[in-house]
Length: 166
Image (cartoon, rainbow, N blue to C red; front, side, top):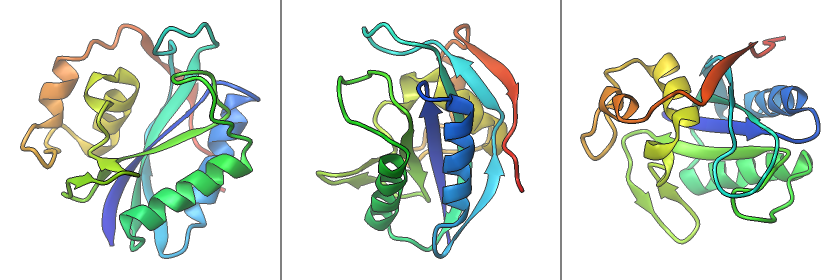
């Protein structure tokens, strides 16, 4: 099994329910199981589009799925939950991203891992730190603690929500 860190985000159509539904779907993926989940965080949207705040979280998925099969499964979950690809950095019902896949560097037309924008996203780094600990080292040798220290968390707050493990 490979440790895959998955980011979840939503700001449309009841984001709390969207994240909970995605969590349940991820827990049902073949040859996979959710090992840990972060708290759910509220964050201001990134990018130029005016839109509601996001709810974000990160989970650790132990999986035997190959990276592109996992990506296909995540995109299927997004589609089932009403994801429509529109404006870049625009509002969405659900966004699922592979942040890390074991210690692999992946650079293909469909998938880049580590996620290329995670280092600038406090709504990814802080939940990732919460479930992985400061001693997590990215494939390029950068430690997570260093990335978090360089990325201010002032637009991020815990939403006071947790995933329902039922």
